[in-house]
Image 1: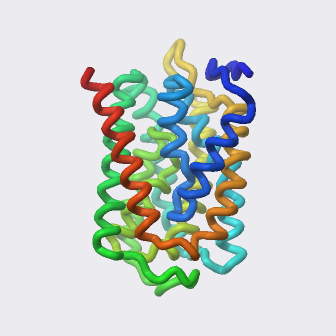
Image 2: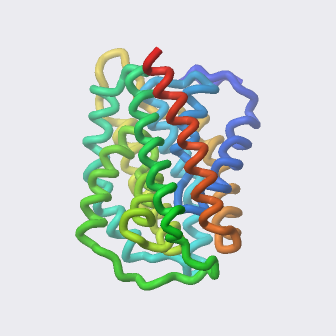
Length: 272
């Protein structure tokens, strides 16, 4: 099947299948899976135009609500933290859009940027795993106290990076909240997914409606993004439902190793 905006030609079942597998595991740590879906689109599908970031955000719009609903339904959503994350990341999205369109439009430079982001994520996850920052997987929320000012400024910075990368920011926010601020992964997972959902709505609008340089396509490939999102929705629902039964250290180490491999690959491609 040909997806006209992106120019990608793949079987119609492949995008939802890939997104399902990715989202099932990443949703357990409060990440939508968009940060891994982007490398798949770039390396496997050959989709490297700036609109790939927008397509990634469309995936978030479709996939995340099922995971958010599951966390809220089980009373495992810290709404105060979720609102603060959204409040901080939203202003940074505009700067992230400008960065992607005007500075990181070249595929070679964007690959390096993606590699550096993935490496930073992996280091945060490894750090928190070594520190044993995981609490028992009993599904309950710990104390809701957190440094509000620090969370806001971190969210603002992450909004810039997430807007350029096309991930909404949750993939950065979750490792930092756990690895740096010492919050429980069971507390932050739902909140970071909710914040990512809200920022993705704004991010898609920026890529869809703001003017881009002549000859540059920034609008998302809606059909491709929706197919990714349908698979991601099923994966996130199941991941959110089973998260409390899975050891956190195993999840963190597995994700960190995968991100290190991806980051190394993109840096090597940049140096060639």
